[in-house]
Amino acid sequence: MTDPLSPEALRADVIQYARMGEHRTASKVDLETAGWIKEEMLAAGLQADFDTWPLRQFQLESCWVETLGTRIGAFPLWHPTPIGNDPINLPLAAGGDLRGKSALVLFDDLMVTAKSDHATKIEAAAQAGARAIVGCTPHASGEIYGQNVIPPLNQKPWPIPVLMVAPKHWHVLSDAADHGDLATLCLSGIDNPAAKARNVVSRLDRGSRWIVVSTPQSGWFRCAGERGAGIALLLGLARWAAASNMPQSFLFLSNSGHEIGHMGIHHIFEQDLLPSPDQTDFWLHLGASIGTRAYAQTDGVLSPRGPEPESWLFCSGDLQAPLERAFEALPHLSAEPYNRKNGEIRWILKRGYSAFSLMGPQRFFHLASDGPEAVDAALLSTIGRTLCRTFKALASVQEEAAT
Image (cartoon, rainbow, N blue to C red; front, side, top):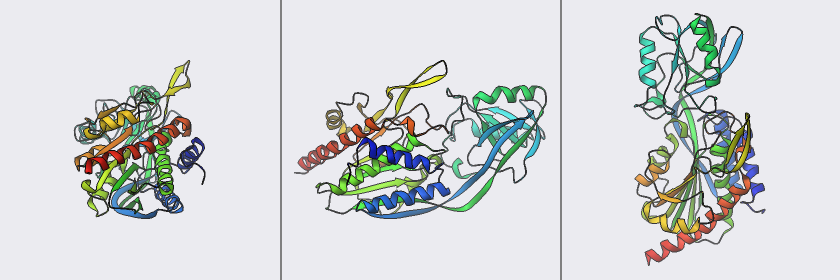
């Protein structure tokens, strides 16, 4: 076997993940991605099975806005209400009488929650008689930012269609609304109340003590940096574990449903699939944007400038000291106790597991332009090798503590 954590091996998996397409939960691409991961786990010598779970999901076909001869790509706010097979023509309006019109709405929050402004503004426009919303969330990139949605909004369609456009196109639509111009709106797809998504559960059964490794596999777009780096590390660590002489059993989890309320990992917790916290030496969660590049922008041109400095290494308090030692050669990853509300790591810690997680932002986070070039494969390889040494060091610490 070639080195599973070499830059070349990790880069190949990131590219393969991105090449498959847009990874929205329960989509054809997401199901194919789960199938690919399962086959790779089986090829590495692990037992691997699907954990399938039901949900309501929308399979997007087309979404755009056209005005004054200019067609602008759009993306629906989840959970979408489709327009139907035929586009509709509506006057644009930024305020005033919205009856029978498409309301222009700016949203303030990057995540759709019960406390964000989305529900309030959408309900107000619908009650005022708007037939649709063309919305925008300001973002430094100027691109459409895919907005994660948490329960109960993740499974509840909006009362009217909501089409999100990029900030760089907002002025075109605002000007059109000022003149009362018509816009053609298209939001087509299939709303499936009986969709199926699947996680991948892979095991190496060796002993009574367990190490768990998990990562999300789904997201709004190609997600090469956001999700692909974690998938590549999951596969690389599984191949390494299968060839290692570590006595612990391993459980590797690839979970769908991340962008719509972390549904996949919640389903895992509902099944009888996990070792208990008492049986688990530690749990590593591979979060977003591991080993990604930071970028500088000069005259509109982006150029990489080393590792993303805002990366995080969150952990339960018992792991902080050993993780600080293990990652001392990677100063941009400094171990700190988890004290936030983002990331799937919080559900793992809430269940009482000793756990740590790598995660962070990056230039293309939640953007359609998130391709393989966002990942520094050499840095990802260094992180992967550090994790292997960390596994051995933490297992020794846990063994000493037990005796």
